[in-house]
Image (spheres, rainbow, N blue to C red):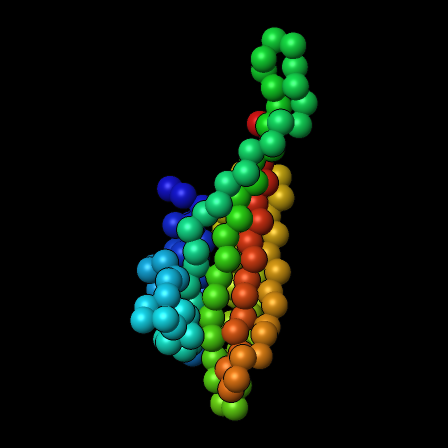
Length: 131
């Protein structure tokens, strides 16, 4: 099971009964409009990006690597009619990082951005393992 699958499952459960739903689709531009803008109150999570860095090169080729996985979550809401449970939604999405086990680092940050009459919340997940 991938990190994205784990996050999707946890976030879907955490947001059940809230004003925001979760899509298993990848966010993309449809007809020039990003899907998360077109479908307000729906959280989308991007595909994983991976970065592998050699931390400690060893003579016997048993090098120690840092594997970093990054994902981004996007949700758009109407700025004029902000959902009353938006703070709880944000906290649930932030805490969903804890559902991914066996990580040295599991972080999530959120950035709200005002676009016209909408607020786009961008969640950036970062997971690191050392092996």
